[in-house]
Image 1 (tube, rainbow, N blue to C red):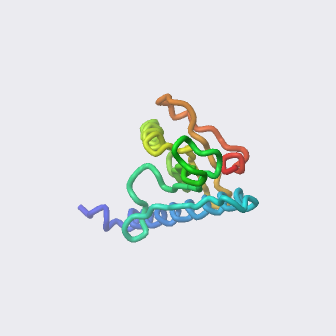
Image 2: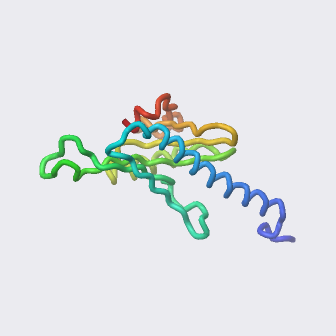
Image 3: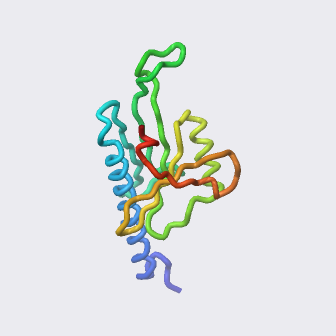
Length: 155
């Protein structure tokens, strides 16, 4: 019996999935930069995580978008000390939507790091990335709501 790693169809699909994931991350970054281009300061920094050989990294978070919070600081901090953080999971091509377990894990990470929000970015070839915000505390997969105006998230 041939090994799955030597099967040409397996190799082709694995390569396609890797390329699609990379493009999905790129198109997500493009949409975020477009939405924040009219905001000169403070600007958002986009951090991506890649594993060995530029493959996807393990874990539920694919991108972090962060900026300094120049609003009124909490007690004990000065203006600009705090950070605003948004977690993003990216799905490309025909990748399945996040599971209820994914949503649960994202909520745990968000609580641990005190984030401002959790987003799902979904991209398919020939279209702009769509964004969905994770709401609520339930274990349902239906907690993702489409973001109509991305500028409202990165305001």
